[in-house]
Length: 313
Image (cartoon, rainbow, N blue to C red; front, side, top):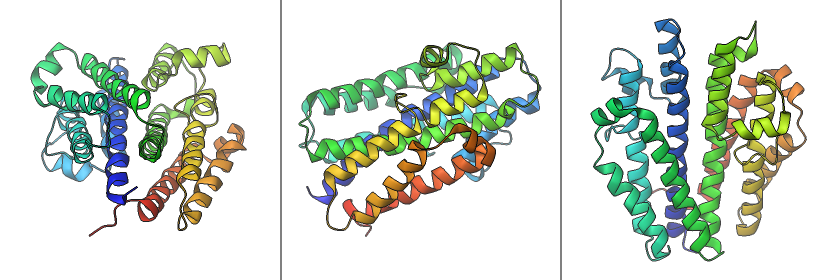
């Protein structure tokens, strides 16, 4: 496959997954903001999203305060913010358009229709009508695109690059969501009450894991078990373990003469997750673990770009 085609397929998938995961992150932050708390603490939650995505400078160049309304305006439909949901869906559509002949008509139409619908949205009606409904729409559209893609495309290299982009982006975003929310919620230190239970539940719902948690643990929600579920469980679709397993398998399927080192990096990271124990992760510091994981995911992405994708001009 031409590296240019692989590049567009890979980034089409990453941007679609990124839009969905951003909707999940904003949604759980919004749900947490409904629990009464001091204004400073609430703004800390919204500011954490900006810090997590390295957008502090761009945001404060236009806004004075990191409150709910300002962050939502910036992160949802702002066309000048290249990390907004709007910009992610636009980039996904542009990449899909570049390789339209490689995609099935159903995949292209799903991606294009999503962009056409979000292009006509306005932030004021969304905020007035309830931002949660918009986030659900984004998650649904991403699921439609993913389902149509996997259900209609030939099981060849093109689909492998789509899978690879999705797995890598999902792993990175699951780590980001867990890191920022675990930090904001204090990692379960001190007494936990109804408010803490609600917020941990909201975190699980943000990654479609609330019912899964109940089925696996059949007990109260604790921070350590949430971390274990989202990091180490191989049967949890959005866990770091499941994502890395998919990355390793896909890299093995598309390997080429220069990709051995990238495959080794992926296998090494996967082994750390596969044989890890949550007690050891927490003992070393969850934030430190997740920060290192995100750095290594970035390194892995750079290796994939170098080995398979379109070289920079």
